[in-house]
Length: 288
Image (tube, rainbow, N blue to C red; front, side, top):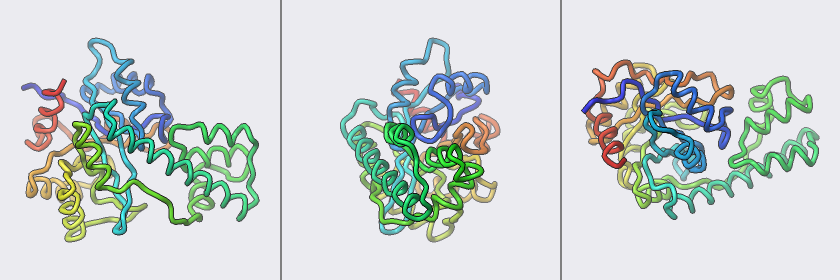
């Protein structure tokens, strides 16, 4: 089999917290020469459905994707789902659950900004926020800049929005993995060494986390990632080999909302693809 020379299986559109539309993503994927890609918006499958509709004959190969923002009593996890059946009830139901959690979190954040800093916004802007598929910190930050409450979106997030702490509801990692499997998809742990913010999870803690997720049905890990050093990458690759996990590669591109280049996965050449990545690609291509 001839494997794609360039892949990127982790990117976001305006449907979550990216700045590119699905059609813009497709054009940029083609410009970068990416031959296999996936759109993995947070708690959303809408973008994958739109991309599938927009693709034309001869365009790069596409894998439906999603990224569930998860949390349990032991920490946070980002669970990627690939090649699932887009209309499958288990995954669409969990997407709706995740969306409802995000809406409630948005409501609490806005209440906090008003009560702590007297930041208020016009009805039209508030309605626009609540109409988004997956409103998050960048969306609030942009409106704060518009009203002059912060100099930049980063200023808004770091100095105001992140000061809000509350017990919010999150999708559980076992529920995310289960819903992906029941939708004929492949559950993968995104950027495994990263927890919340700059938190690094290494050594025995990482092993424990991966083994726990494997017990839920985890099938793979994202070993090639824009934010990984070679040391971190090798640690994840070693664990993938030890536990017979599939491997994926992604940039985590967010357009203007994140300083990451589309296609930057630290995966240098198809000649160096590990068997664990080739197995993932084989599974995706065999389902098409």
